[in-house]
Image (tube, helix red, strand yellow):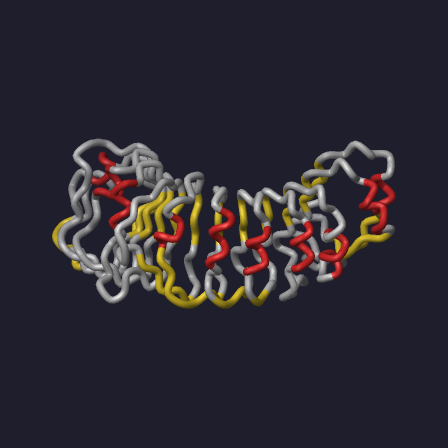
Length: 310
């Protein structure tokens, strides 16, 4: 947008001393005036500031709002800070969304947020290893670290006892993620798993075995991992609510084996850039009647396009 940012006068909120939730998202706000008035919003539990033009100065103002339980600062590109200290006063936080900013440095400080349930750090510039102290945050239900610069070896068994974990995304970092380095059984049932571009199980490239114990997944991204072996049909049959399966850019071989019955939920199937061979199964359109996106290019398929999808 070419519109100039404007400043929001906090005194407008003076009459609302009992306000519990405030949403100022996508308003091109560049700053606040009469900021001290924020302290008078003592009942405020949720603050949504997504999609504005705030800069680093907003962080000090929020540091006083220690009663906050949910804070959404996503998509404020002018925030480029390595000091996450200001968030650490917010010990009541259960939901923190910093998606799409330019935060950088270590995330170790976030380990102090003992009540955190959802931590979204997607699309920033965070670096270093995933800190072991995150084990303090074992109540996490959602952890999204995708699209940063995290590096080093990381074992997914770290999350074995995160009983409430439903959403995990580590995609598009410089991590080397292992799932087979120890015997472990997940206590969680994931709904979303993102491990795209995670150098998964190098050098063997095996599909994670712990996924055989997952039955609630709706989205799986294992793309760009040099995975080998035959097409893992069991990923579909294990998860009756599966909507998205991305296995693109791997080295899967063999034939495309489909489930033996109709699968209503699958919406997106991407197995492009693998080494799968043979004919596309004739009944693919009947097995996946809701399929909106199918990508099978750059494989070794032959023969005609099945009538069921033509």
